[in-house]
Amino acid sequence: MEKAIDLRSEDLRKLFGENDKYLEKIEDELSVSLINRNGALKILGDDENVNKAASLIKQIINSTEGSKDLEEQKVDYAIELSKENKEESLSILDKDTICHTVNGRPIKPKTLGQKAYVDAMKKDMVVFGIGPAGTGKTYLAMALAITAFKNNEVNKIILTRPAIEAGEKLGFLPGDLQSKVDPYLRPLYDALYQIMGAEGFQKNMEKGLIEVAPLAYMRGRTLDDAYIILDEAQNTTPAQMKMFLTRIGFGSKVVITGDSSQKDLPKDVKSGLDVAVKILKNIDGISVCNLTSKDVVRHPLVQKIVKAYEKYEEKNQEHKNRRNN
Image (tube, rainbow, N blue to C red; front, side):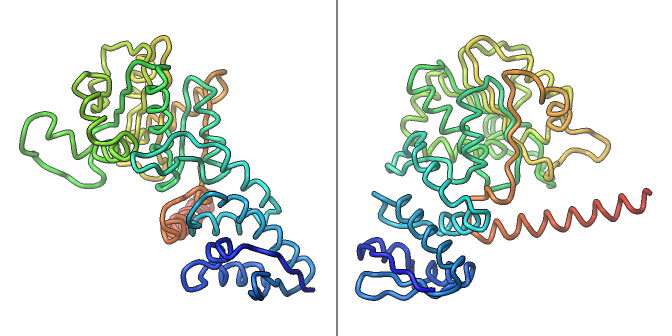
């Protein structure tokens, strides 16, 4: 079967990608041949594959309207959706811009999992965002927190995480207390700088309207009218998590993010994140969003690494279960 799609030269450039890498991906993954003939893109192959490729290409082009370039992540994700006959879902994602970075880049959910996570944060008072690295758990929460702050929906942003080394002993760090905790909080600062800008962040930090602090600082406080993000929550103990959740005051929003597969707690200590999700998942006003390797939006290689580890851990679990039985 052969089908032709008329495309503007600008759309063809985006669709082909650098050195035709996107074109080759679509050809390989959907088993079709794509040929450019004077602005018409010819698709050749089996009937089903040709129709699927035509639908996929139209969805990709529609979703890049107004954008200069096409991101590799979008192509990869569009192909995944096409295999599940969900390529039309791509248009849903582009309608939901949360805010813009200081450089003017729009921040929006890039996968259906991220879209569900963003919708939950808009709707519920407490949201658990659980998933592997690169799924945008913290970044999207930060974008929504800054948007709520700018819209005067909250008076303060509080960002916190437990001060536990990622499998390393950092020893006695030099400097004052802030200098000692900064290495643990650096990823939070990075996201704030990108979205709010260094100057805007510093001004609000000096006024006490943005607070970045270790989890231990939350004890004994009640947090009203604040947007609170607890990052790396898999490294909390059940007692710490209970302490944190009981700090929530009126007019506050809470997002708790973590990756249950990357705990740095001692082996005999349960994760406060795991315990909290079991206890609270059926309470109204609390959402639990599970993101997966499909929602990874970093370099495509990161997605492959996450998938490889998931397979490895599944095999280990199966082996343990067989041994225990």
